[in-house]
Length: 235
Ligand code: SAM
Image 1 (spheres, rainbow, N blue to C red):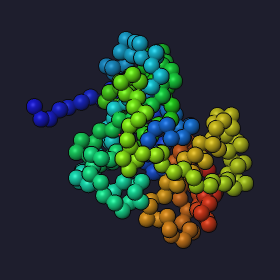
Image 2 (cartoon, rainbow, N blue to C red):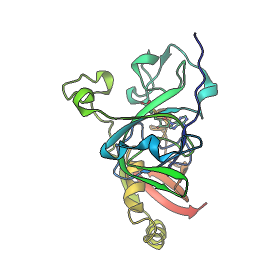
Image 3 (cartoon, protein in one colour):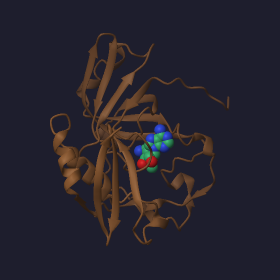
Image 4 (cartoon, rainbow, N blue to C red):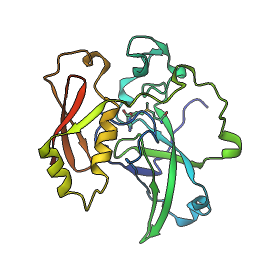
């Protein structure tokens, strides 16, 4: 047997509506949580019985937005500035022989109402609509390895871009305070990772970037090494 077919068992609802600016791993920022909704015939409360006792889960998913891009034996990890090449299996690149990803995420709660099974999740690294093919509880006794070596990814990636907000952006954030109490912190932490492509980082800085986060098109600019959020408009 050399080919397999898997079913989508659930879908992710995430604040990241496009790939651009998504953190490279889960848990890198405080906000950015979402939901995993199981789909029929897997949306049975029995299928998650006992799961609520685990604080973290592995979710296994398909990189559905890049899966048509194929794979190469070496890739250029953004973490190495986009120059050095590493073997695909030494990286978490989305362009893999089988476009499968796995993320360790916090499980906040489980809702099983009205024929739905919804897992509420902490900080994600997945785009909205990502198809899930499996869920497994994280087993700290076997999987926590504090002494492990992390290769070229030993330390958390830098997220040290200074982010300021224009007056307009601050007023707009204020208007959505009730629905999104941590909106400013969320945007700040996403942009502090400097999601611009590596080859743009040295360029002169007139370019305006935009990304769809939550219900907003967020626009920003980098000037003298500082990110300024220009505005955010409802999409
Ligand atoms: N934690 C997972 C892993 O290690 O397998 C994913 C790591 S991968 C580097 C995370 C990146 O994948 C995100 O920053 C985003 O750009 C991209 N991504 C997220 N969801 C995706 C999807 N459904 N299809 C393609 N790319 C996706």
